[in-house]
Length: 370
Image 1 (cartoon, helix red, strand yellow):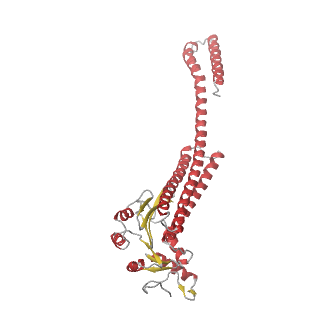
Image 2: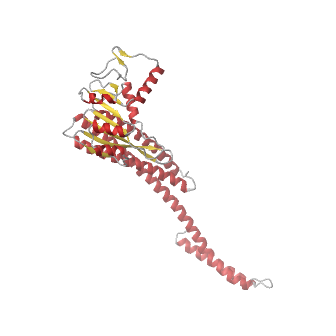
Image 3: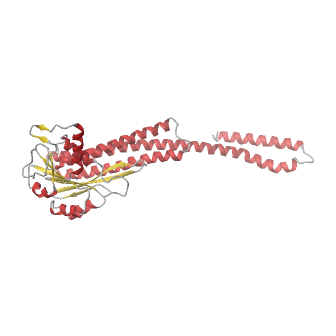
């Protein structure tokens, strides 16, 4: 088994690359070993030339950071006191940067230092109840290291980590990903986040199509409150994704501006590509939101029109019956009695009621009420 120079024998090549090729194993054994390697890693050494990944220990970090043949990826699931001290003493992070990683950030952030960039990105995760939770992932990108750490949980049942780092680690283990710089590895993680966001937008677009079909085919429920709640819940999810994508895209745009002319051209291109991914997602989600807004307004206009027509018909009924009822209530006491009924007066009153009703109906017709 090969090892990079000056790495102790406790480190092992996670891709299990032997001198003669991959070590043959049964499929179930390979899968079990892969899960174990991903679940237990904290530090990885990545060769800049081959892109191969080795596991390492925290004690080897100073030795690895002194080398120029590769870079390290440190993933910190829990930013406790020891982890903060390591960030300060080993990587030399500014206390404010460490503090921003330790607290919950509600918007995308960028902390620029001459030796590193702190990127605070978010990914939306639908909870199934109409809400969209924002999952934070902090990335510290240096010249020879990448540090990732999930932000503090927002007090929701959603896991504190979006799973993007685990997916990228799987690809590193399998040899499907061979980054040569920390920014390239950060770009892979960011692309995984945007792919998940794109799937969420696609699911919401499918829901938008279903709601639009109900509105156009007039198959929406009679009780508009529940249907309107579905419309506004979907719009809220789209708006949340649009906000997250737009904010993160602006942060990557700022990072691209800061690195342009000073950083490696390929790294600057990858930062710009990350910006384009988020802004493209923001544009797609915004377009779906605008379309759903039109569907909502169409449905509300139809519902309001139906209510207006009903009110106009009720007004016609009241306008016709109210004078007739008033005339009947006053005249009937003197015309109709138990002892004697005055038929001439009764017929005259009925004719008057008929004439009044006809006049009111004609007037309502001219007003366009029916």
